[in-house]
Length: 234
Length: 352
Image (cartoon, rainbow over all chains, first blue to last red; front, top):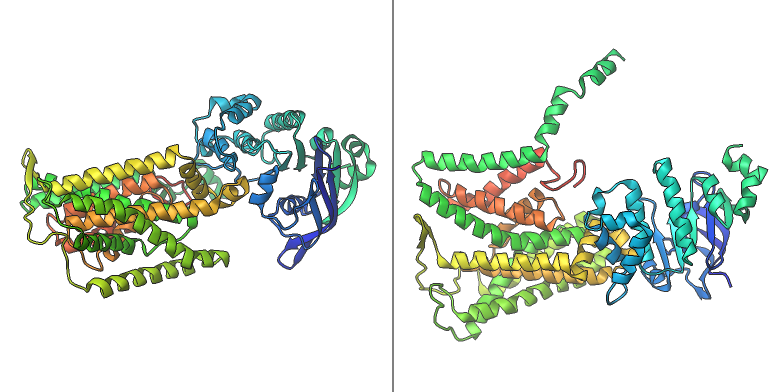
């Protein structure tokens, strides 16, 4: 059974319809990538899945449960965590406190979970007492991802994790996504960097104008002339 | 084109450079120190002795501690909820009058020498803190929560807070009238010599110590407890707090309980040092907002620093000004900060 099933999802902002009958599926333990040109509705799709936008039509199921219309704080408790593209850390809190906030809904000690995140991101362990606001873009992205992992989610939503990062850091972040996935967490991500994300993804959806255009295995899409023409720049 | 090139060669225009220099943190600190020094010189020129000025400084730190109790709550409420809580001063008044009411119920014990008050006031202080905290929470439940649900703009929130302020003050007028009151009438409160000719009243030292204790407790709360950290996180970024799974309603509840409780304690202490009157808290609003803005809105430690500066400047100015101008002096500091560094001491350039 798929972990996440989005069927016929239509939604938007105010009067403006952004997504038209969108379909997505994420199998447990897989990496699924959404790519597409600017304004294709990629981030909107992510927000709708996480309950930041109410669906107008269609259904969103997490496991067997319908989550369309649930608020984000309820969805978090079901085991889905979301890392927004910007403003994704608490700047005046230390790295350690940021991680603790990720486990707010749990009672009891978070020490073990923190250690697991530090194992994944040794750089954060060195800087656990530093305020997140004073860190570089790449480090902030790690803090944000680490915080989302504190709840041991079944599904992690990443909105453009590599946006605005230097090429070397982009590679590092993609490597971390692979590591996170290897530990059994399914990942649904939106990426500007289509080539890299297709290399990584088990399955990918190409969105154009708020609708499904093409989908298939990441490797297949890399070689697809249609995707190349539409999106990879020939 | 040529102009742009010249600009690149010489950096920003001199006026822009001057503006940036004046807006730096160092410049603000220098400005504030210069202001204090100027007050000192001005008082000295009028024949005020150094001992008297030092006594005023001690009293200023005490007043700063009391202001800090109000300012920390005000800044937390703004940080977490984005409400400019104009009712905060009246919450302080409310606390002061609740203690006065309590004194009429409890038997008055002998004064705890060298202080002017008896043990019953300490008991009342412990009771007033949760009561005023609960009043703040009630205000939120009855007024602000509804406005939040409707995503009311901050002007509406400010007006609603003002309404809350009038409501509280009217209740006080109804219950106790407009007269000045004292917790203990007819008890002498002599100032004693601390050292080197510095004279303060023992009550004021007690107030300073108690204010410091409360501030330390707030520090422990914000740095060591999960709820305190969640409060800071929510003040940083409320949307992110919500999607992280932080119980933001719980955070809001605790923010009011703590902010209100501190205001109540501050009100009792302020009334103990001066007198009770229904507008006492209202007149503290200007110094409170000045403290909060000076220390960067939303920053609890900044509010503490701001309150100490305002308390000092206020008290030192009484060496040669009528004490009634105290809030006016705070207003001067507020204007200076807004002119040169509107984001306050701890703010980042460009942001509040």
